[in-house]
Length: 394
Image 1 (spheres, rainbow, N blue to C red):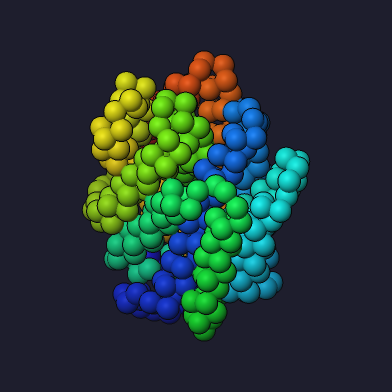
Image 2 (tube, rainbow, N blue to C red):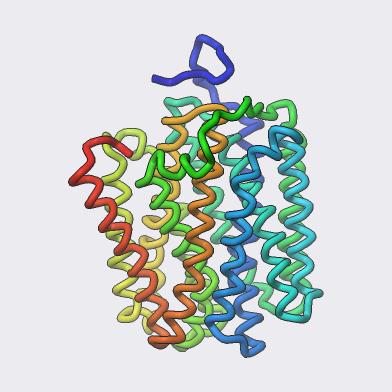
């Protein structure tokens, strides 16, 4: 069932901890950078009087960058090695993060977004490939649960840092850049664990998107909801009467839910027969939570509790899809499939902020919740359709 890409006869059962720590360090930096950067940049643009649609358009550059970077990441890493490519991506991400503070004109934020999120995408693809190769099959759910938990900690820590330091001055940008640079240390320390990406197959990149359609659609929805939510929730919270700090703390509750849920979700995913049922359940919870948001948002405490469970369920879309990918593919195929997985995440990042921003401009403040419900509703329909018509686990 499980094949070793290195040709060794035995399946490795131990976890390669240096590789795990290096990949986790990279994804921690990614999580904090996104969790801090998206609300920070949106709040600054809102203060400048930029429309929700334009804020969404600028945020959507993250998706453009990721869609451009994902297909070429494996090719670059095959030539420069995984470790060298990740270190270069860290340097580019840190430099562009700091660049936002010094870029006064709005148009300058578009190329900066592309550089920043292109580098972040490279880290995403390679850290996920590295961690899937470091995870023995029998412990994949646990290892990916740890990985997703730390990513979620980063997403939670980003808004928390934002709630403390605010949006004024160079400090939030310097903190973000510094955290990203620190991720290079464990990666360089683990360079002896550098995973080798073998020769690529003849399968076109786009074909990987359709190998596991339920999983890739799940990460598309996750990307749309996560990117759009992080970008525009501070605006939504502000328009519904919360302070900047209160809105940031609500974002932190979503991240905290991710942290608490991911290891249990990973373990359950290892034991469930058809993961599509689990993915469908998460989408239903996301749909119900989105529809309930306009009726709960005026009560901060109740909203925080709901967002705790909602956030954990939504992040399960990513964890379960990634575990499924690691079980089915290996070697260069796994690296390419990870890139396709992140590509779909990027498509969500591209469409999510733009859709939510337009919805808020067209239908008022609560267009934020209706747009989220739209994405979850589409995925519920897809999973139910697949479960009814396709007996295969795809």
